[in-house]
Image (tube, helix red, strand yellow):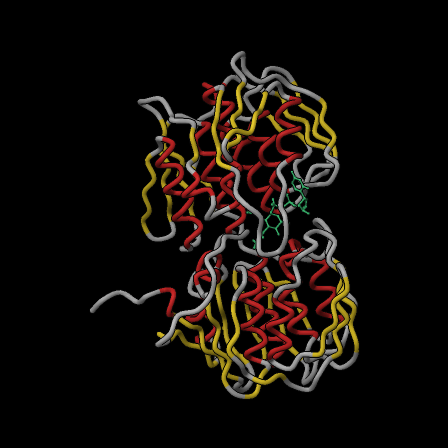
Length: 439
Ligand code: EPU
């Protein structure tokens, strides 16, 4: 039997009754990818556990292999080995353009090799995503950059040295690149207005376990005392659970009704979201090993505004908008991070949602139910939002471009089906969708 053609694959969702049961959340994509890049700082084999089985992890694995590391996987355990030979500090366009997180190899490559050439990925389906803060931060540490033929070429021939850096905005990626570079720089780096996301904290914890000296983990002021590169040793680390995957199950529950236990979910990583879900009428309770949640007959409208952690994450927003499109009342959803992150709204409107967007606001007037339609997953979270919408729609919803969903979710269809959702993968006879990268 020939393998399924991803371009022809669809996720097909139908409304059914309430969800009931238990799902286990995987490790966070946005942590695992950065931990993989961090592994190149220590000689030997770093073991990462709870690594999600997603396409982005495969691509990052290929990128690290291209750079000269050995990457192997056994179930949810990933081993990244460095040592024995020099790294090739070049991240090729073919891989970088598929996954924006690859820019995070820039800092560790400069630290290890004194130079790096990383292709600049293009814009995203949810707008332009510059890397100016990454570059300015690394320049403050002593690197110089030029852009040639679409590649960022960085050099730090005499090594990196600590500096005082203030980020204009608490960028996740810029914080990570700067921390990765600063760990083995000479002297102390003070990074103000640093991102505080649980995934950034996870990276700092891995680096500390390797032997890096980082103060202020989880705060917006990180103080990194540089250590000798040779002093970092490989570790065995479990990836933090994926809070956006948890939010996805809670959103599915919200529109379906019922009760769910999400094992491994950490309520304290998503306090603002839990508060919004409570305002919408859901009950969300922290358990020692996860979260228990239940949903009312119909959700209530609430206003939502995205912000860096600990605010409501921009990655939750498509899920929340899908929920609010069938809530009772009118909600205003404001996007403060990615100006163009409303493309999925057109798809929701094809399903009968009543949403009006204006710049970075969406006014969502809840309708009693949506109507199943053929829609596209424009990016990872937009794809998940289509699943939520499909569970709130009469008739069948057929989601195309599912490769985006596979980039960020491991076994989403199987996990949702196991708690009673009517969801399956199906091969369609005709292809559709554009080729684009995201996240
Ligand atoms: N920004 C700049 N210049 C920079 C860096 C960022 O202007 O040098 C701007 C961005 O354009 C954006 C804002 O700062 O407006 C925040 O961007 P950030 O750097 O924090 O985001 P990121 O590191 O590119 C990560 C996640 C995203 C998530 C955002 C925000 C990964 C691989 N990606 O992106 O996740 O939305 O943080 O929390 O970690 C996803 O998982 O689907 C996804 C898109």
